[in-house]
Length: 71
Image (tube, rainbow, N blue to C red; front, side, top):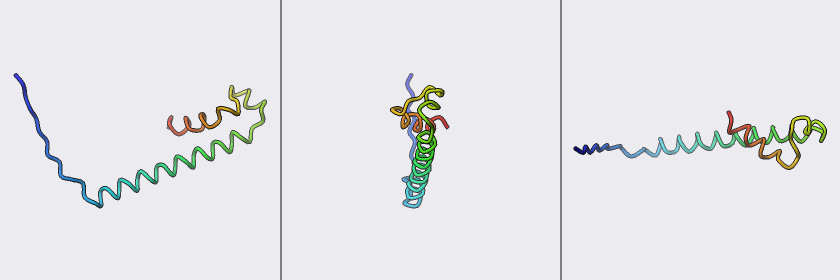
């Protein structure tokens, strides 16, 4: 026996869409700031300190991006 369920959703109002767009923009801006600050801190370390952490200068951007994605 098969069942069919239908749902009707009211279209999002322009206010809801604008609010969602602003929230998305704010989150992206925050994430860029975190990445930029993390990169600045990592770039301030010497090669020896980076090596102690198991990092190289070539993967600093990747590490900074992971710091945002892991939160």
